[in-house]
View (cartoon, rainbow, N blue to C red):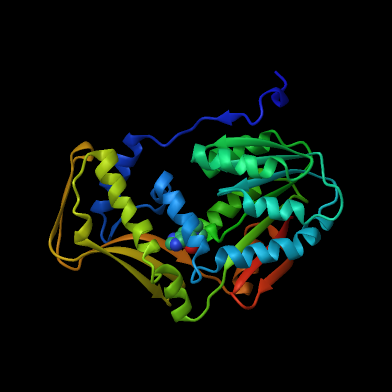
Amino acid sequence: MDPRAAKPFVTLDQTSVEQFAADVKYYLSLSPRQLPSRYFYDDLGSALFESICRLPWYTITRAEMRLLAAHGDSVFRRLPSLTHVVELGPGNGEKLRTLLQAASRRLGPIDVHLIDVSASALAIAAQNIENAGDVRVITHQATYDSGLRDALTQRTGRTLVAFLGSNIGNFDPPGASAFLQNIRASVKNGDAVLLGVDLVKSTDRLLAAYDDPLGVTAAFNRNLLVRINRELGASIDLDGFSHRAVWNAEQGRVEMHLVARTAQAIHVPHAHVDERLQPGETIWTESSYKYVPEQIDDLLESCGFNPTAQWTDREDGFALTMAEAF
Ligand code: AVJ
């Protein structure tokens, strides 16, 4: 069947309640206790994240949009005969739309592959990108790994893989390397990556971005508990946990935690979880690694990509880096 007949077409690969339950059980039993940050993004969590992006204290989104608008044309100039763009975790699609619209010459026809675990995010992103030029949007409801494999088997010509929004910050250093090496293994020489990465800045600014005065990030964090209650039949006392952001200078990351205000019991019937937390005990829910520009180049190079351009926003400390597979 001509894939152009169904547009956008969707590949199913949904995270199940069973997987969520298994992850909650496993990660809560670790020391220190954890919950994976990928579970932030249900409908409410995605809406809260979109609100975070509008907060005056969270500068990542605006800084990156400025860079994409200002330098998007340079990105495409460096990629003549581009035929495919793959974006991992497109969010609402506005970043990629801004990039595509920055091209001064006519692009296309271009196949745009969007990969995300959230069907609703994909639908919104696809809509936002479909009218950004001569593009055909193909969505993959999948994890990055399987979605990427899927998207790249359909590649015919030169490909750009975009990983924006400082999403790479959620990987620890070995994870970030493994992730980029996996991309490298799936692309060909001359294909490129575009990486948006938040930079190290003053502790005050880093903490304000992850512990905002309006409490939106706190709500985003505590929504994990809301999900466990609703989806796994638990009755965790939401008021029993407070939000905490920490700058871990040694590791170069902002950490988010949920802190038990008093002794807390976490009983999750569907996950066979029965944990007791001491007052002050924490659940580590996210790491957002921050980079210095040279670290980004080194990371890319060590993973088989040759950095060809880097644009930085000095005001908000953000870097957009382009690199070519060698
Ligand atoms: C979407 C992973 C880039 O780490 O800054 C925002 C998520 N967490 N506020 C980030 C997030 C708290 C965000 N990323």
